[in-house]
Amino acid sequence: MPTIHVVNGPNLNLLGTREPEVYGHETLADVEARCRTLTDSLGHALVFRQSNSEGTLVDWLQDIGREVAAGSALGVVLNAGAYTHTSVALRDAIVGASVPTIEVHVSNVHAREEFRHHSYLSPVAIGIVVGFGTGGYELAIRGLAERGRDGRGG
Image 1 (cartoon, rainbow, N blue to C red):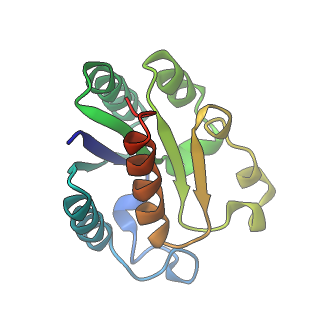
Image 2: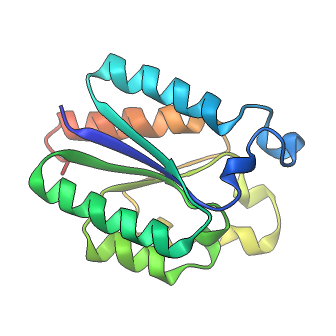
């Protein structure tokens, strides 16, 4: 079965300690363990990564696009963190590399500061999961896997 990628952007490495009243107490390692259990049960491999660097994220999205084109990956679950609201480069990488992308946010960004209401990624994502805490990652993985079963995957 094809790989599902989960890519995390800036400050997600602080999950569990950064503003736990907003983001909860679960660490990124906890999230990865839950995602791995789920992808294993669905018969998919998982690549789970985090970077605070926009360029690294762009490189990863381009690599994932090549894997999707080769049929070895379904796409990406992307929590781009603050880059969601600022990065045309990530948006262009998703489009340019033809990466099926599900955008994920731990918090409900629409109930927060005004600047968080706009996403450069939403218009090019195949789906968006917002406000379900870290459980949103699992919802997104299920969505990507279901899309792949329907023959709409990479």
